[in-house]
Length: 250
Image 1 (cartoon, helix red, strand yellow):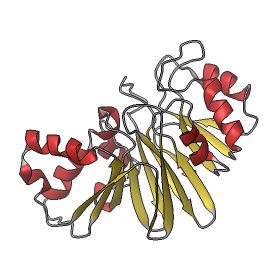
Image 2: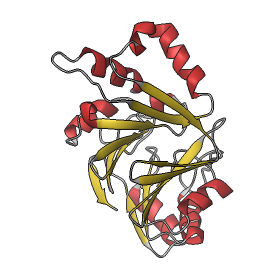
Image 3: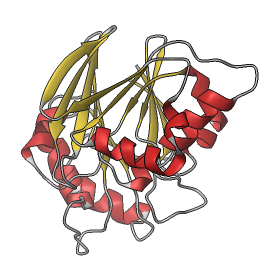
């Protein structure tokens, strides 16, 4: 597996950090995990076209994780000389069907009138096998029905929290992961319910015994030195702060 960090930031936009968006390559297939403002453009900058995306995975329905779904659907329909024919699988939390229906109300039913099949699957505490890899989803402590993901392929494990507070679900997904992509939103001493501080992220990584921790969903107040100090007090393993357009081998 190979991970590309498309957006390592939040709804509080920064020039150097776009909102959440990640491409996970599994074999020859491309999976987009979340997709906030500008994700498709940043994918192109990272060398991944929206034409190559096989599946979409969403952790929750906040706009900084989902808003580029509309540009994705319009781009795949309205690019001259290009017609998508292979099925698009979309995975998301319970309530995703109703969420997409609201987009259709705004932009029209033609948005989904495409030449390819769209299959939507709502997940909660779910395990399934897709092509050559296994996916496990568990409920996170954030917005209603928010989930995180664990991907297993060829003996390797990648886990992605989405947005979450400390909870049993994130610990289960992260257990013995080769790479854990974990949100770290606010500094220690400025705790916001539903998000993690550096010390909390470090404790999760230590308890789950992960091999490599990558911190993402960075709000502007969280500076690099403040993150690393809090995390390293709790976790002695490999720690990195995500950067936009960063590539990670798993």
